[in-house]
Image (tube, rainbow, N blue to C red; front, side):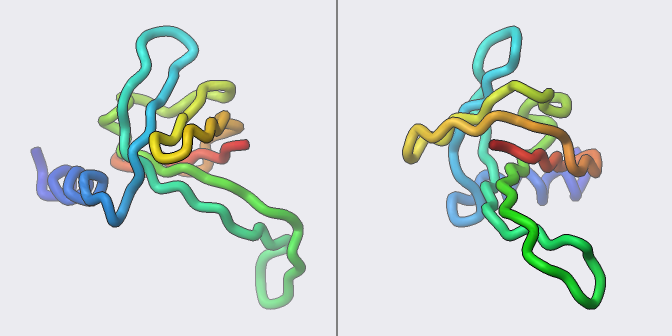
Length: 103
């Protein structure tokens, strides 16, 4: 395990930095994961001047927990309140963390 892998694992294990959830794939058993749930305003267009275009909710998770990018239609269920978030699309994958847009 590399230093980066160890740091990523430590970040996701820290309850102050992440929340417990369950990832439910389209096929197979549910997988317990720790995620970073972010609800933010989405600005359009970017740059020096922009207007609020809408809101966007994203989930970021440690890629090795699931072993792949989440596919559209798969879900994350938050342990704290039972809220279910459905994956819309993948926004970013740096090889350690994956960030997906959810509804």
